[in-house]
Amino acid sequence: ELCVQRVKLTEVLGVVRKSLPSPKPETIHWYIEHWTDLKNEALRNGSKSLNSPKRNVYDYSVSQVVYIARMGSEVGLGCFMQLHPGEHDSPLEWPFSKVYSVGVIHPKGQSSTISYKVNAGWHKHRRNFLRPKGGSNGAFGARRLSPAEELEFDGFIENDTLHVFLEIEP
Image (cartoon, rainbow, N blue to C red; front, side, top):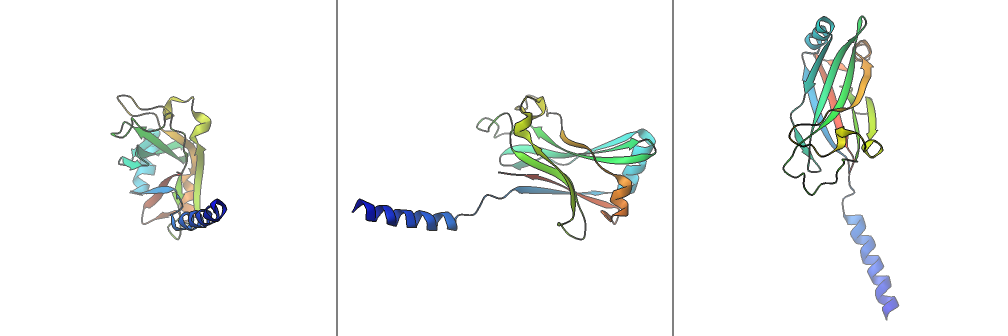
């Protein structure tokens, strides 16, 4: 009788597993307007940094940071994630060790991206991924994701707007 119950229980577990949603990465989108002005400001002043509003992803308080910097006579784009103190920090796993991606999305479709993937678990020793105390941690990501000229030439800028994203895996 135990064998029969075990077989039935295994069948039920299989059905339950199939009915549960599979964990999917959470993605934050940010549309940066006035690209030409920002790029020109970076050319004049050496750099321009932008911070997105804070968002909660898997209860971590995070934001995106975009860094536009002059590199000789050109301008390059960097994309980062930044951790902030949050109201749900106590029960969370620290240091932050999830895998995340930062990058840009082509306006004609999400199948065309330029991105940089970070396995934060490989960088646990970095202060960027420790629990934020008092203020926000330093941002971590790709300092030179793409030259601005390539983004423009390849059509990533549309209506003077750049679409950036942050995707965090469960």
